[in-house]
Amino acid sequence: MDFRESVCERVFDALVRDFLSRHPEGTIVELGCGLDARFERTDNGRATWWELDVPAVMDVRRRFFQETPRRHFLSGSAFNTEWIDAVAASKPSACLVVAEGSTIYFPLADNLQLLANIAARLPGAGFVTDAAGRVFVATQRWHPQIGRFAARIPWSLPELLRAVHDHPSLTIDQVIDPLAPPEALGLPPLPARWRLAKAALSLLGPLGRNQYRVLHLALGN
Ligand SMILES: C[S@@+](CC[C@H](N)C(=O)[O-])C[C@H]1O[C@@H](n2cnc3c(N)ncnc32)[C@H](O)[C@@H]1O
Image 1 (spheres, rainbow, N blue to C red):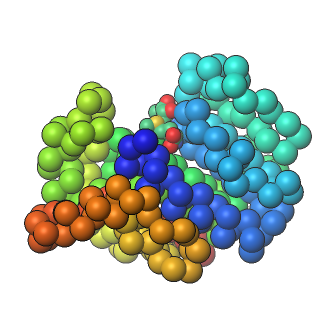
Image 2 (image 1 turned 45 degrees about the horizontal axis):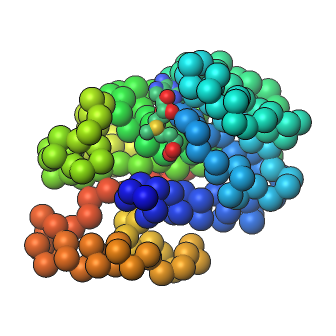
């Protein structure tokens, strides 16, 4: 299992569980869900789920996962507003939008527009996503996992933080290093190989520090 699956995914899952503990009948939206099984891992039997990906991927997803009255599938782009209108029309009591490893590959301006669109239509929603630091972005083509794919991350965490900071309806709640998650998330210790990797990287000083972060934003408050 790679870094994203064994280290980051569990932070996203913990944030979803935390949201559902506070809003058991809340709504989770998963943008760019791929074949992710977050519903299977974290559903509480009461929440409503919307899972979205581009049509070709949703066609594949439908072979492995089933829609139910509480679990809806949406085919389309995260950057369109149709899905936001569909979710808003369901009048969610509370909403958390999750985008793991999906919108990070799109331009910063598109991501900011996405956040603004959600803030306008689902005010009060939370947004959980990932971001990478400058060194990570500059060296991604040599990254053991990301480097294998054609897609590249076109912006870095400081740019996003600055833009969110300057935006009147976006707030940064948490910036989490998945190799050092806050105790409040109640996660078990990191798998041994990642504890070792973290210790080895720290020997390299600032350059070796993990630069990948999970962000929790508040939209439209
Ligand atoms: C690296 S995968 C991550 C999948 C899943 N979130 C996970 O963590 O396993 C990126 C996903 O983003 C989806 N994607 C790409 N462009 C998209 C768009 N415009 N709107 C929604 N999803 C998109 C891809 O089809 C793919 O399933």
